[in-house]
Length: 265
Image (cartoon, rainbow, N blue to C red; front, side, top):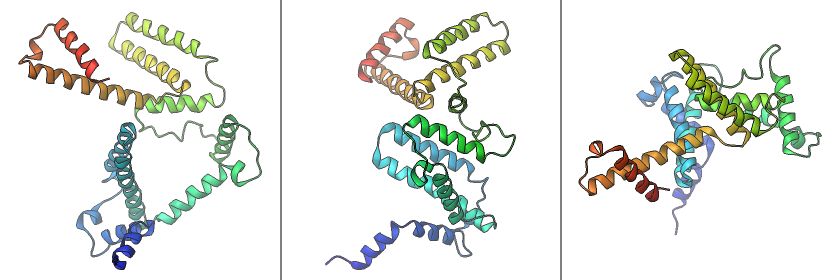
């Protein structure tokens, strides 16, 4: 017969409130010295790292890894909530209540009487509701964290302003602007001028990508990973052939690169 105590234990471990109790115990009087010593600032980097690990799992389409990394990210949320509770600020229940209220408030077409007929109408309603939520005089860009990676921040601010019509009429206009910004780099004379022109070029490319539904951060992460794998394949080929990569001519290196591209698509 199956062990009923183990079954009960497994059921308990799948409950959200069990996680809350474990965290409270870890930071309790007789808890773990490390967990008890942490503050919002001391574990700030952990939250960032766990977020990127979730993104990496998403990029790899590895559901097993994603399941694990989402748990690690959830742990960070619970830890910060417990730290806040210990400080007398708020607890996890208030965190959950606020997000539930926000979801209901921002979906009146589901939880209210408003009617919508398209995704575009949903987006317009969402922006209008957020407008009323902002403090008077606040910018619609104020809610975007400036700690986002620069490309992600660029796409997000351009997505926000596009919702209120501040965008190109079509992609061709943006493509022409990309070419214009690229040409301005060659005419820049000083280091500062070049920095400005590179920034303008990247900003315009970010706009084109967000218009076409491309997550530029994900696209660049994917390109970086492809390069890593292809260069590693080149190194492996050199090792197999007793070659020193650094002594090869540029043409020989490029020939190896073409081989690597056939190995790593």
